Image (cartoon, rainbow, N blue to C red):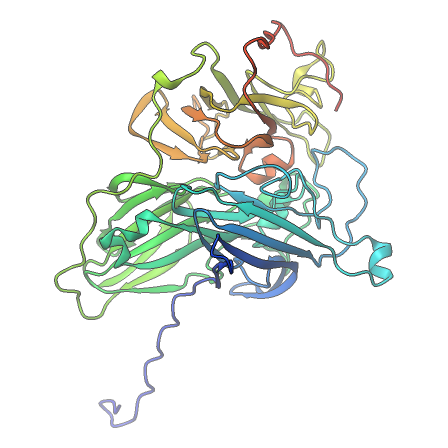
Length: 532
């Protein structure tokens, strides 16, 4: 094309397509009994180009950030073979609530209602690399199988997977070890949703210094490293949206430290986010909002309709740069694509009348005792409330106790019977609003009924619930029903550095007791002794 001076101008460069993770789907068994997604997840250090950082070397799944998206349906099975191609671990002989074994991992299918036992969603398993002797001898890289049976009737929605080896989780996730799980189902058949483009928007939070993730050798090793945010592995990618077009965005906060209060902001206007699900559970009806808040680990499905042409940005409060750019341009869709008014609710609500033991409420309190231990990890990240881990020295200074309220792999803080419904109060007593403690319970979703004393109408199903500090800090009230699966699992703070440093509790899901086996009442007083 000739310019005004007669010189040919270079053609405009086409915008790169909006990136999407690789997709893996199941194969149906030859007898038609069920579909199985048989996938290898190869974990090793990978060189990745990150704008502003050049080439960085981090642990990844299959060489990409994020790993492949796994698309399944209720009743399918996941067979995930994980190859540990990482170097041998350095020796560790210290506290289990300190960073250790950085090249050991396992797998958590975050948000799926599946078994926490055996070779399923069992985060108490460990997948270590070869030892130094094995590597020197040329032994094959170890392979570990995770098999997850997704129950018939499982809610359709957006979930994710990530490593969960205690003491190594934070450093692995901030290098990009994460991927999305999509369970397809009824909500996908709603005509207005079926007509919309279905896009994964996976936000990873990377901690990069000198081309790699810093070793977690001190309390501020990761928190003192600036965050780099990617969407589907790209820094600020561009998404095309036509005026009047509706797209479905599966927003995934695959972060380790940062809460994301998300808005789509233009020069003069914002685009409305029509939220249809939270943490993989579909709402009864869309909720129109300007802001969708995602704690570390949350997911939200939203419908977005292109409005006035122009450039918009997906921004998170407190993050200086946009996460992605949205170009609303092109021929308008006429008439504009419709939005649904009703949805197939993903899970029926619970009610206070469903509580099995009205006098048996549980309380979880996230609490930090600052500067009570020696450097380089001076802070104690505890879970207190009604069932803290007992103290090593019950008569001593509990603020300096090395066991009280800290994770112990052999102490079950909560024994929970299948079929029971309980009310829990979860609170943070931190006073700084920027200090978040996201509560995450494995295996069973919780129904958030109240926040800071105010009833939510309607309540919201979540598997991860944000709590910010303040004067006072946030308090939420939850209802939870323990269903289908027995075994040991955990609850914890999903600010993953806190979890690695002990802000976690062991949960034992058990069959109901027989009537002749009454529970033994807890004795009043200070906690009993437990060695660290």
